[in-house]
Amino acid sequence: MPPRPPARPRRSYDQYCAAARALDAVGDRWTLLIVRELLAGPRRYTDLHADLPGVSTDVLASRLKDMEQGGLAERRRLPAPVSAYVYELTPRGRELLPVLRALARFGADDLGDRAPTDAVRAHWFALPLLDGVALEEGLLEVCLPEGGFHVRVGGDGVVSYGDGPAPGVPDARMVLDAGAAVEVGRGVLGVGEGVRGGRIVVSGEGALAKALRAG
Image (cartoon, rainbow, N blue to C red):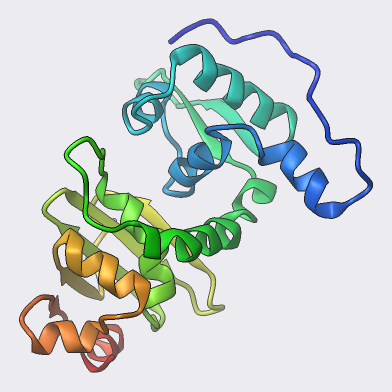
């Protein structure tokens, strides 16, 4: 991991406008994609760099420092014997989840076919899926050929997601490919329709699984 960069003056639009203030905090290139990664849980610097193809080490370190200064993220040391540092979002940083969901919804129609040069990670499909699927309370594990992620809906309706398999036994498991995931996120394919058409497999017997199959 490169040395942590020194604090630098933040650029500002110098406009007395809430949208401009928000862009002062997250408008730099790569910042919102770093937020996307950290919404999936605490990440080590090396993991962030691996899942942000194209970002330089200098830029990544600089953006993380800016996010710490802005109160969006924090860096903490994992307890022994791991002895590693991770970055995670603060409560203020997690408030950006609906912003990323809205951006995913806005950009879904522009995805088109995947180009040979396009990188892809399974958990990148979580944001559009959160808008394309009405979820009951519970823990959902989503499996794609590229990997998997999990989504948790609390009793208060709060939604969170994480990279990798579900911690513990999920209430439902959904298996699909990237094409189906994109269509679900765009709202052109319902999960129930995908199940009936053989493009999506949903397992589980609880309310969450039954709601997905009926959706």
